[in-house]
Each structure stands twice: as C-alpha cells, then as structure tokens.
Image (tube, rainbow, N blue to C red; front, side, top):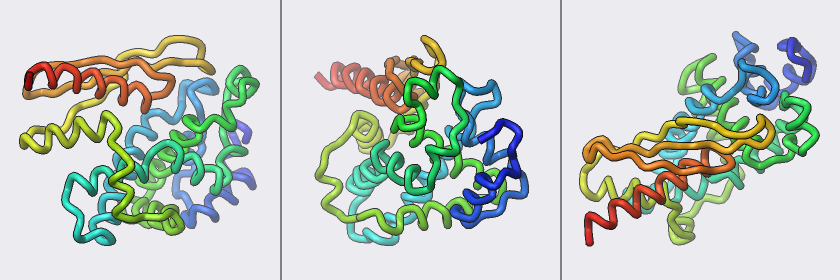
Length: 233
C-alpha cells in the first residue's frame, strides 16, 4: 500500500472487511505502518489497541464463561489474545498485503512475521477505537473472535509470566504492573525491545529483552516473578 493512499482501493476494501468506514482513514493507514517505514508508525496505536482488545475479550468471556473465577478467566484471556491467535486473525483480514514496511524489513520477510502482524491487528483495533469509540471496537473484536474456540479448558494450557504475575498481584489485592518500553536496539527490521515492568507498591522495576514488545514484556514479568519469589522465601 502506498504511503499516501489513504483512499486506495485496498484500504477501502479493508474497511469493508472491518465493517467500519473510517471518518479519519489516516488512522487506519497509520495502524498498518511499521516503524521501519516511517516515524509516523503504529506503535502508539498498537499500545492502545492492546488495552481495548483485552477489555473487549474480558467482556466476552464474562458473558460466555459465567461460572469461571477471576484467575481462570485471566488464563483463558491470555490464551485467546496470544500472538499465534492474533497472527491468524490478521491473515484472515488480509493484513499481510496491507502492511507498510521499510525495504530491509520487507526483504527479511516482515510481511509474514507473526509478531508484526499481531501488532498490526492490535493497532487496527486501536484505530477503530480512536475513530469511533469503544462500542465499535468491541463489535469488531467480537466479530473477529466469532470463529475462535472459547472454552473453560483453555485455562489449563498454562500460565505465561505476565498472567502469573497478574494473578500473584491480584491475590494480594495489589495494583497491576506497569509495562513500558525503555529502549530499542538494532536495525528497524531486526529490533530488540528493552521493556521495564514496575510494581509501584514495592517501588521496584525489572527489565527484560525480547524480539518484540510482547516478548520483552514477558521477559520483564519473568524477572519480576524471580524477585517476588525471593520475598516469599
């Protein structure tokens, strides 16, 4: 998709698939823009979309799995919004062909990279939220997950570090951790993310490195869990 093509046939077709006509199509174009392509990239919108997605899926699970306790609902949600699922949904929407990538990222196969596609899907959800509010974004998420299997057994698949940390804190009636990207390293098409995980009650922050923001958050959460377990010992 060309950089200025906010009214291109491809972008109009994507809006039809999303069942949302953008008042500000520049938001959708930005949601599809990787940092290797332009400084006006999708990472801030993706950050917002991640929160919108989690809230929408939480509402969906609250309705469909009314018997599950809070901890199990958190694990089901973590399994639903993991990279593999979001990547598949992005492919179904046709996002690979819509991505705007820098030359190096495009040559290295960025169009098919699961982390980039999962991030782009979250950014698209964030763009719908910015353009039309939560209700429209929630409707989009529900349509996307209509054919995704949701069942209570998903909670037994296992906990990732972020979910385990969240449950540890919730069990002690503490605030959820704050994640922030504190640095990036490497070329745009092969970046690593330095992510900080902070627990305000302890005045403590731990850091993790990963090949994507998500991976960095998981690494930082794992480091925080190691610290917290020393407090319990």
